[in-house]
Length: 235
Image (cartoon, rainbow, N blue to C red; front, side, top):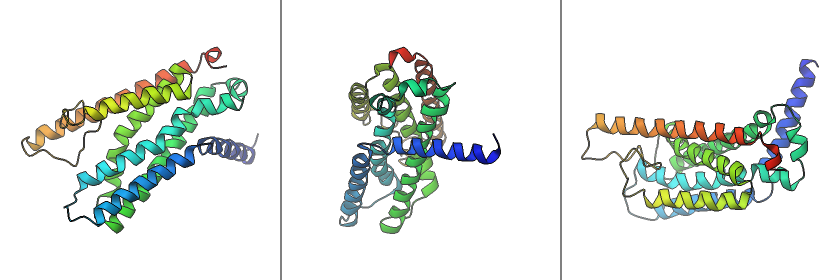
C-alpha cells in the first residue's frame, strides 16, 4: 500500500468516525451548550455586576460538559445499535484505532468550540487570556470525559452510564462550595485566587489538583481500554 492509499484510508476512517461523533442526539447537546452560553453572556451584558476571569471560567465549564457528554458516553452504544461491534472488534488493536480515536476527536472538537466561545467572550464581554482559559478548563473536562468513557465500558449501557456520571457530577458540584479552595475540588477555579492564602501555597494546591486530575484521567482511559478487550461483554 503506497502513501496515497494510506492517506485515503486514513481520511475515510476519520470521516466515518466523525459521523459517529456527530450522530444522533449530539446536535441537541451542542445547541443546549451554545444556548446556555449565550444566555449567560446576555445576562452579563445587561447586568451592572463586575465581571472577572474567574466568572468566565465558571460560565464556560457547563457548556464544555454538555459538549463532551454525549459523544463520550454513547461512543460504544452507537456501534452496538448499528450492529457494527463485531466488525470493529475484528480489527487488530481496535480499542486504540477506533474508540480512542473517537475520544480524541471529541476532545479536539471540545477544544475548538471552547476557543470560539472564549474569543466571543473577548469580543462581547471581557478581555480574557483565551489560550490559558481553555487550557485550564481542559483539566476538569478531560477528567470528567475520561470517567464517563470508563463507566460506558463498565456498565455497557449508555443510558445507565449517563445516569451514574450525572450523579457523580452532581456530587462533585454539591461539594464544590465546601471544597472551594481544596485540591480535591475537581472544579477548582485557578482564576479565583483566595485572599487568605499565600500565592506559593495556592500554586501548590493548584499543582496538586491538576496532577490528580491528569493521573485520574490516565487511569480511567487505560482501564476503559482494558475493559474493551472483553468483547463478549458488549456483543
